[in-house]
Image 1: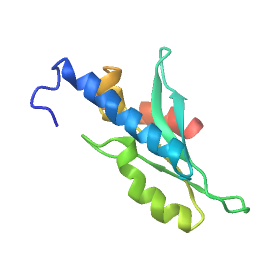
Image 2: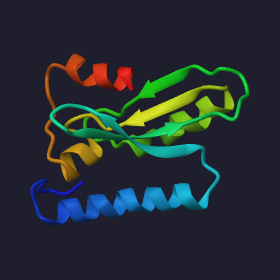
Image 3: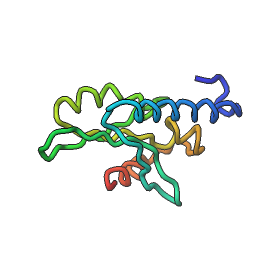
Image 4: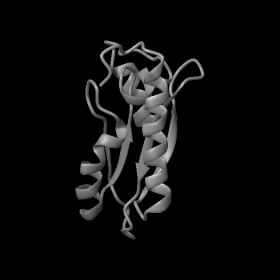
Length: 121
């Protein structure tokens, strides 16, 4: 956590974190792929869709961290959910992770307007 969230270094370090997680996904057999969820006014919400290897139709858990969390912080949820046959959609809402640091989207109080496009996705 940077003491000044508006410091010019913040987007650079945030992008390095995203790139590192992307590299992890490319080099491992981890079952997640990056996604961009259509949001509003041409913006998208970043996330990761994690698909179980189960041959059955699997329910999907929609999970997002709170406050300062990042979508990739939800890896612990994916680890257990995949073993139990669930898919998981990890995502950053406005004011979280990538959206605030790389897109400048602040948190908003009417979360139903954020969650609706995520569920529709």
